[in-house]
Amino acid sequence: MSYGVYLTTTDGRPFITPESTPVSLLTKVTASGNGSASTTVSVDTSLVNIPFILSDAPAFVGVGYGANQLTVSAHRMDDSGGAVNLQAYIFSVVPPALPKWGIALWDATGKCILTNETRVLRDVTTIGSKGDDSAGININQSIAGKWAIMPDIAGYLYGVYQQAPIVIVQGFYAQYNGASTQVSSVLASSIPTGTQGSITNSKNSIRAIDASLYD
Image 1 (spheres, rainbow, N blue to C red):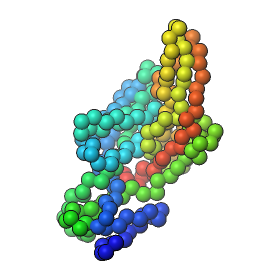
Image 2 (image 1 turned 135 degrees about the vertical axis):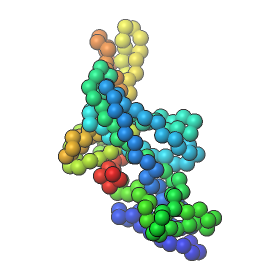
Image 3 (image 1 turned 120 degrees about the vertical axis):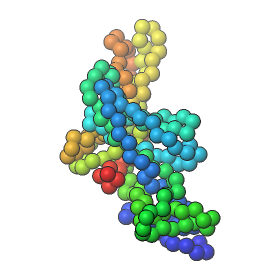
Image 4 (image 1 turned 45 degrees about the vertical axis):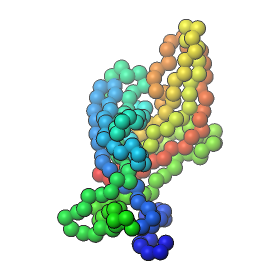
């Protein structure tokens, strides 16, 4: 680095001006529904966009990308009903708006990359040990506080229903009850009666953040 500012987050991860832009909170969104909830956010899909999601139900969380859009969702396994209230925190590298007063930093090209109002993504926690049998579909933890997770795959159910092959994704959920968050795995849909099959464990870990830092 020829010049600039060297900064670190509270967990020790650095970003350096003028060579990099911190990943920071773009927006927080909410959605509610019966059985499922979803909402769409306008984003620049050429940039990094990272969602962390939680709800008040054991609801499979997912993310989809379209033309300059990011859709976050949470739905109960059977979609048959029951309230689902979703909260999602979207992080990106979009240049921040200048504050009315405070501190601002620019990179070598003149792009503002950081202000005193920037909510930098920090203290990302890993739940489960990737590649271990206890990860993936076997993750089941209760964590004090409000935690949101990045959507990922826990495993797959491979089976046969009415002589036809079926595959059902198993993902994760983060259920916040106002005091603690239950993080576990859940199938994306219910298993049809009479299905014969088994679940394969992806052995993935979960990335999570303390959502209260961004409220």
